[in-house]
Image 1 (cartoon, one colour):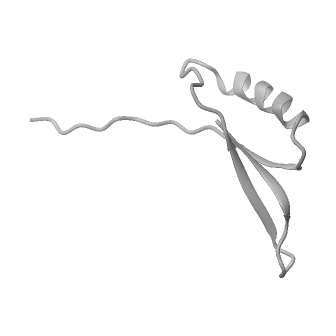
Image 2 (cartoon, helix red, strand yellow; image 1 turned 90 degrees about the horizontal axis):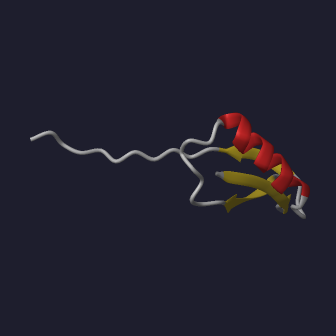
Image 3 (cartoon, helix red, strand yellow; image 1 turned 90 degrees about the vertical axis):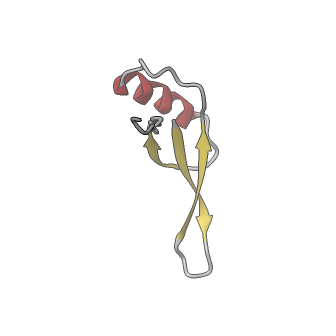
Length: 64
């Protein structure tokens, strides 16, 4: 799971974003569960939250 926060503005007044990553999230966790946890984590961030992201990885293998 990742939380994207806005950390400031650049010289052109465009937003600067940083990503906070949280590993070892159970794959069985529902989107609603993750959203609930992400909202709680957002409350303790110093910077405003821009987005919550769920990252899913799969291993690909070639069938021989």
